[in-house]
Length: 242
Image 1: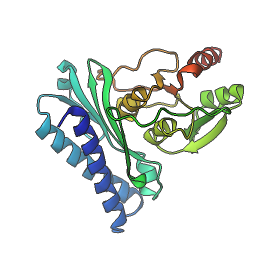
Image 2: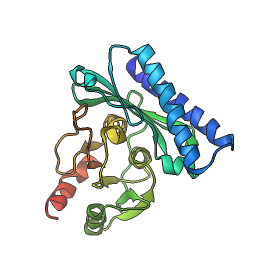
Image 3: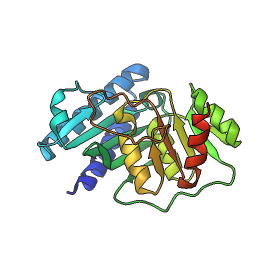
Image 4: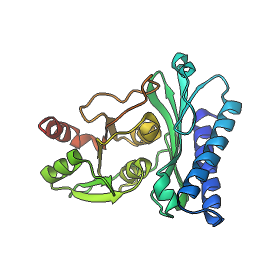
């Protein structure tokens, strides 16, 4: 399999495993979330170690090591993006599998298992449509103050949603137009979504316009902007004015 095919297969298979685990009804709440994180992580890590043994690996659910820093190719995974949403039986959670090459999000797959859908960087669907009245996805529990402020300036509708992957894929799927996050993320939260979004012609960067860089010693990557290219300058100028 190509790297992109592998990413898509692993994200999809992990999603299937997670749905089956949740439907078993043996676990609920935090116990279900913890079990899902472990089961999906064990599966993804084992598969990547077997299929791409020479590549580096960074996972939210595995102990990080400095060995990946010497690699040009590093797989960056989030076995359950939105563990809370997953454990609550919601649809807005995801599985992220990405490959960063030379510190950039090169290949990615984001599975939305509850929807039976996997979006991938090598097989983009139709170019995302932009609404005349802009729509911005925000955290359903803690909307970032910068996002709320920019939405007010742009007269954009706020759409509360769960995981980072679900929010980013809402832009890809034409269900929203802007994802501006400033509340703190890590590389695994946005590497796969950025790869997929970029493949669909969307803009992806930090909220100051700087590029998203991966496989860094410090994996903290606190802010993210995904939007249509024609809105980039307007959004960046407003962020700069805050």
